Length: 375
Image: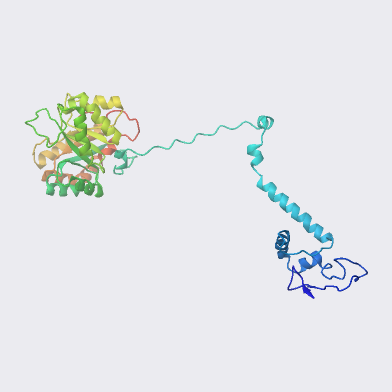
């Protein structure tokens, strides 16, 4: 007795030795017991082997036995398999007809589309002055006062003392001080907004010396832009620049135009302090629709003492309430820093909000010229 080639472990096969058996039938099926099981034997045995057996049979690996004609149950299972296969194919084609096979008549029969509400266009990257700005409540209704402490980066003690002021106070650093990049980063880490105070040619130049490598009205604009770029290399954490002196330079329109263009390209604010009667900055900034903040030097080199300084602050509070915004620049004298340390409490009583300088510049792109009236 041989083993069944499909189910060698289960179904024995008898091989006849003579020509007639099982009712006188002859040929390959005479006397064989493997014919009778056929599909039924495979189903009752291990039906999961059936696909592999047929595959091997097609490849010539196994010789398939002769199978009896399928009965009703086999026909039912076959019809069910065909139905399942047709369903899978139909599901796989869902969406194809709706997107690819519409002819002109079908397209014409579609209902009219409802116009969609356009999605808002995402804004591009924020300009540097907004990215580096100290957070300030947009719904602050009180008048705003920005205080800038200038002349920092030269005297270590004064610079360190300014770092301890309320973080709403803005700090301005001269680019030719030692370790300016370090001071800028440290001030920013302490929560202050920072400005770079770029030296510019004053009206009394050269007797009045603004410091090394100033922007000069007598130089070609290209040379001044090289000097500006060298200074701006330090200004990564800054919201902008302010002028250190600069009466003569800022009166030269051919110099101010490229200056504002370079700041706009970098996304930086310009804070003009002590604008003279001949300054061209406001006119050019308005024509360019570029934000500009005007700040009033409160001391302008004077050492007036604590009481006089306090009185001048009072006039600034009145101006802020009258105009809804004001900005001042002070120098880091010890009595000035002492008065500024208590400024938030005094301003609360005055009904004025202490604000970083960027809070005086509108947040709208393509802005209207000067953010503040002239002092």
